[in-house]
Length: 155
Image (cartoon, rainbow, N blue to C red; front, side, top):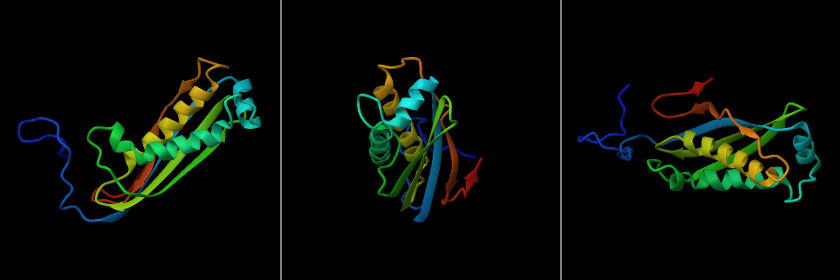
């Protein structure tokens, strides 16, 4: 596969998507935050002093998805048509975060989904760091993507 992020001088560039077809595109990413069981219990109870951790993290994820091109230098700004963030846990010490991002456009939304879950996890950390500073974020990865020239992907 030819890498397209380099110009004729071998320097980084934003990929030109002018000639690509507009298609429906989706991407789902996942991450987790490992923490003490007591920290997870307090998140689920809603007893963290800074507020509703999951609600704030969900908003952070959506905001981050919409601003991905401000964070990642070579990303195209995209008109997102949907962002859905869900949370789960293992009942003990791991919080799971998934984000599905959608658009109809000329380039995919993998980076927007990855940015969304990353921002949500960082927000969890920020809101809970007074309780626990040794939380571990990750792994963070793409679960699936649909649409585009390269077709669908699913782990």
